Length: 212
Image: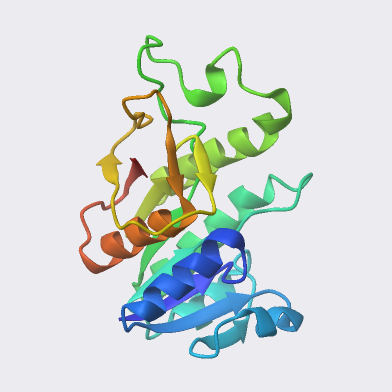
């Protein structure tokens, strides 16, 4: 597959690029600043572009089989998630290329809470609310877009660097929790799940989640 990855030098994006390359895919790795090109694997096609610009998205998705967005805004710029989602959807709608978005966990319902979402739980850190609410708005932008084929992957509560095991569970709109009550996955296995969805699409115009 020919895959374009926005946010390719980030913590998640870098692992997505590495996983895609390990499977033999042709990867166009996109970063906003060319100074970050040295952070990208030599096997990837390094390109400069901005996922919040429709023209960049259209140009960098043309002729591709898939676009993956793993961008994250800087603190204080959480609203950029919505702007970027709109540009990504408009860009791929022009080219007819499928879009996989790395999203947030805040809108997932928490088991045993009577339907509360993660961001609605009493112990949710106030400092995380801006990015959490922006992720919820990002998903709503996707749901309102009529012209694109998209899927939105919400991580579990904990998404951290770790080990690639190749094991994970798939869920829908509910936070996945293991037998010990932990909701987590490594960034490496998160990338595995994302590429599995890329190769064998099961979610169209829908949110899904993964976890151990």
